[in-house]
Each structure stands twice: as C-alpha cells, then as structure tokens.
Length: 457
Image 1 (cartoon, rainbow, N blue to C red):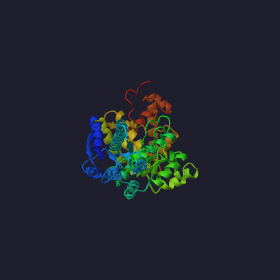
Image 2: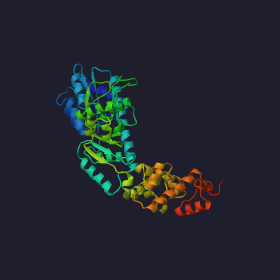
Image 3: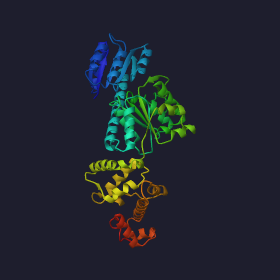
Image 4: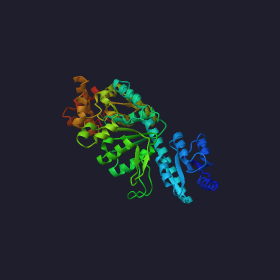
C-alpha cells in the first residue's frame, strides 16, 4: 500500500482519481489547491504526489519544488492541460517523475502510478539489501597509520559535494570507503546507488546509468529511469570505473559537467543532483596515456583521491579484522569459533594478494570445515599452489629468513596433504622425503592430518 497525495482544483478529477487509487488498496488524501498540497507535505511521508499544473495559489511547479525539498525520494506526476506540454517538460527537468496531458484515460494514469510505485519499491529493496550487506561485511576497521590516513581523508571529503576517486587493489574495501563518505555527508539518508561498470556490456551500461525511453531499442517496452535518476539527492558509486568504454566516457563526462542526463532514445534533458564516487583497481594515469581513459574525465573524477591500502601494508590491523570476521562467522554458524596459536601465527606471514576479501573467505571456509571449534593451520589452506602465491610467503621483507623458511615449509606440507587427501605416505612421496620426516615436520608445525588419511594407502 502506498500513500498518495492528489492536488487538483477540479472536484470531479479529485474524486475519480481517489476512488481509483483507493480501489487499488492505496491510502489517499485529496486537496483542492497548491497551498494545501504544500501544507500536507509537512503531515506525512508521501510515496507519490499527483498534482495539477495550474491551480489557485501555488501551482504544480511550486508543489514539485516543495516536494523535492522535503523528500527527494517522493515521486511526482504532473497533470497538465492540452497545449501546456512545454510546462510539463519543464516540470520533468525540475524532477517530476512523469506527466500526463488532460484529457487522459483513467487506465493511462493507473499504469503510470503502478510503474512508479514498482520502481520505488525496487529502489527501497535495493537500499535494504545494501544495508544488510553493509551490516554483514562491517565497517572500515583498523587503527594503524594507513587506515587513520584513509579516515582523515574521508572526514575532510564527506561534507563536500566534490567527486571522489577511490583507488586500490581488489578486495581492499573501496565500496566501504564510498559508503563511509556517503553516511558522513549531508546526503546520508538519501539513496546510495552502486553500479559495477565491469559487469555490464556497453549498451546495457548506458541504459543502466542514464535510463531509456520506451521503444529506444528492442526490448525497451517501457520508460526506465537510470541509476543517476534513482540516486537523485544521494550518491552514485561507480565501481570499476576504469572499465567504462571510451565512447561512453564522453557521455559520462558531459553529465558530470552539466548535471543533466539524457535517457537513451530521448533528446530531453533531466536535471540530476548526484554526488559521484568512483573506484578502480587500475592505474588510470597509465590508462589515460594509453588512450583507454579520457584525460578530462580522469581529472573530473580525481578531485579528491583516497588510496585504500593493501592488507600486507597494514598487518597491524590484522587482529581486529580477524576478530570481527570470526564474530560474524560465529553468528552465522551458531557456534563459537577460535584460531589456534599456530594458525594465528601463520596469518601475518601470508601476503594476502586478495586482501581483506581473501582474509574473510579464508576464515569463513576454515570455520565451516574445521574439526570442533578451533581453526588450525591446515584449515586455513594457505598453500603455494602457484609460484605467485608462494612468493606471497617468501617475498616478505618484514619477516626474517627463519620465519619465511618456516612459513614456506608449512605451506608445502599443507599443500601436499591436501593434494593426497591426507594420505601421509603419498604426501611424503610427493615431497620426495621419508614418511618419518614428514610426520616430524607435521608435528613441528602443528599440522593435523585429516581424519582417516594417516594410514590410508
């Protein structure tokens, strides 16, 4: 059920619309002029306002402006007499969701209302999912120098409306940084809309960002608002912005400069008030030199820059990250989970090429598969399956030679046992050593072979 406000100086029109909307199960309030409509904005949170353009006192444009000021998420449909289409177009530019020219059929109005309410419901659902995801993954953690610097920049950037470019390797929490900026900004409480630019083909991405008109392309059976419009008043997060095709970069640049969008298939422009935060794991400076990213767009996005550090560069925050992740996993599993001292010692030695995302994955998997409630080194499965992952152990200047050798040896043992399904005899053969030597090394590193595998042949 939606809450709908109807403003029209014609009693017959008010009654017909009210009856139709109430029959559909909605809660409806009717007023006879623009001044009453503006007063009604203070009395409740409206999902939809249907207002006539020409009314005594304040007109429909004034109602629209008041609605946008009071709650930018409220959709507004403007009704206009035949011949006043220019005024209706102006209303669209000011933020109206749609307009309908009088006389109109009741079914036409009902279809427009149904579409807008479905879009609002979908946007609300996305926002709820985002909140749940944020609660699941947590906030930015760590008190080390690198993370303090990130937080300080967030605090300075948040009160402004300038674009922000968040850089860093995959898995370092770039979206969390964007959410922190949004939630500390004057736009908090308004939409935070993320778009993964790498996940969509060029034509689909253009429609996703800017929306499209009915009939703009095959399959476009209705008008659709894009992410810029859905994020109106709030923040649009362009993840993997370096993947946007060059042809589409020009249109994005124009939107950032003029703060207007054109839906695909339309020549009309719609004003948008959106704070843009972009993120990339690419070196955009190199991309601009190679001609794969527009230099003018790069400078437009890179007004404020925040570099998220790789996990290997702030290992002092590892205990907090581990503790928070295990608490979340324990809640999901319904049982307590802890790290053995040997497993805890193994974590800082690994170079974490996948960063915090990899850490969460490793700990979640280990918690599910470990015997009992204690995660041991073998459960972590930090094995050098490739030369690159082996280098994650060896290329660790913050560790001494002995620690690096021990870590590499431990990883080799775990890898051999996993590949031989816990069979010690075959693992010893794989490592070209005696079985007794293997057992000594396993005991030395606190590695427990999988149950049932010790004597299997």
